[in-house]
Amino acid sequence: MVSVSNLNIAIRGNHILSDISMTLKEGRIYALLGENGSGKTTLLRALTSYYPDYDGSILYSGKELKSLKRRDREALHAILPQSLPLSDMTVESLLSSFPDAMGYLKDYGLELLSSRRVNTLSGGEQEMVFLSLLLSRSVLLYALDEVEASLGMRYKRMCAEAMLSLKERKKIVLASFHDLNRAFSVADELIVLSQGRLVFKGGKEDFIRDEVYSKYFDLRMEMISTPSGRKYIFF
Amino acid sequence: MARRFLFTCFLSAFALFAVLLLSLFVGSVPIDSAKILTTGSLDNIIFFSLRLPRVFASILSGLAFSVSGLLIQKATGNALSSPNIIGVNSGAGAAVLLSLSFFPSLFALLPAFAFIGSTLALVMVFSISLLTKRVDSSISLILSGVAVNALFNAVISTISSINPDVMATYSSFSIGGFSGIYYSQLKIPSLLIILSFAASFFLCKRMDVLALGDEMASSMGYRPTRIRMTLILTASLMASSAVTFSGLLGFVGLVTPHIAFFLSSGKSRQSLILSSLIGPALVTLSDLLGRTVLSPSELPAGIFMAVIGVPFFIFLLLRRLK
Image (tube, rainbow over all chains, first blue to last red; front, side, top):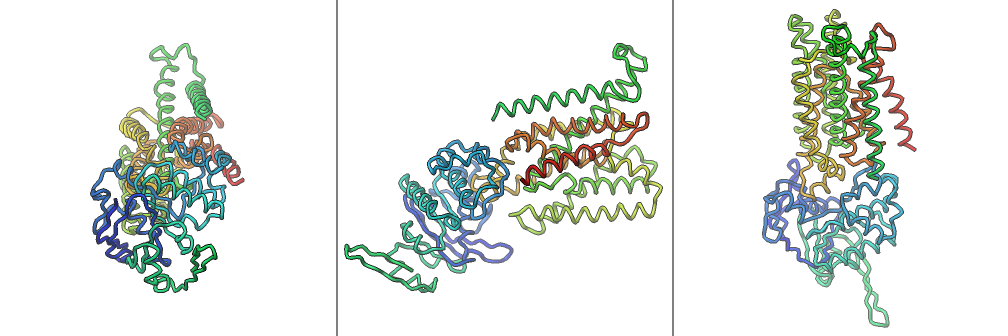
């Protein structure tokens, strides 16, 4: 379990995150939502030790993140950043320090990429390479920063399946989304940030009941019921 | 993959060995290998007091600049970085010029001045880059390097226009070379260079992690800023030590890591091993050419470093852009 309480992050005097408190539980997928600049990336970074010092507390199974040793932190969290590093290496040598990563890449049918240089791949292919790297690490919390933004339909589906398999392995998945519809179809719970504050955290029913979509995203909701009784929600 | 790398290592080591042998036995004065061990013979003196220290010096400086360049390129994530970028060259250059024009009697302390100058430049680059508080990027490091370089180059230009007499001595220092080198000049620098070289092997894993970007590096528990500092400090220790006896030979520090990258998979350990073989070979070869092409007169090694390095560098650039 990861508990965040009264977390504040300020960069050069600007408060990016103010007073965030929340609890994340094993075996759940959380979708992190919010407009541009609402603090999603900063929160994902804070939870993966990007800031050596922070105000407030981030507890991983009761232990304060910033006071832990390097090896302990390495075993706790992994991130797939929004902007990927430019690498001139081949996929094979990039992944050589992560023994299981090539296996994941094979599962995606992308083993042919292994001899190509990373910076010659398309955006989506690069994303899949680093997704394989992420999955090869065995940690508690997996943070994915707008992973779907550069993915086509097929890779989006694979990525969603990867999140579900992490969930089955009792991991915590925290993924930021811009597309509410995608967030609804993948996540168990939704977390909404607005101007650096946590304004909503809860299930889909609460999200709809509280009309969060209209308050913070200026969206309307349509629900379509099919004759078979299934409900489809669109924003 | 490992096999190919071993083969490349073997070839580079062989090339280095061949260049070293050539360097020891070829020069403006032919030496008779049978008489080398006869004490007091001319061959003996030339071999042990002129050629050997010179070859030692070129190996050390090739090693120092190349590994330093590799560490700096890894620290900044920028393929254009070299020891020059953290002000090693301009700092040492300005200090040497200042000492030549204001304390000409302290000629023997020139290496110490060079070391102080390059260290001062480094401290300035670091302080400016820390003041910007852009912990997330290496751009601030490169930009403050550019600023400090500009400042020291202005000092160099000022002194050279006020006091043109010192320029003759300065120009040979600024091109870089090994003529008139003697053992005691190498004592302290060689110790520092070998220690830092040994230390860089422990930094390989960190260099690879840093290449994944600050976010992934942090998520693996590392502190990217701390890694960068360690890399730059080690690199500058090596480069400033080498500057004291070989002058501003920094170009090798730009070229060698690129050759090493081209010949390996790009993992830091492989690049480090190859750089440590190729760098010394390149510098020793440049010095050999400098001594022999216009024999009996000499050209500084720095000139041939450019003659060999530039076409090779352009070749690599074209290969990579394809």
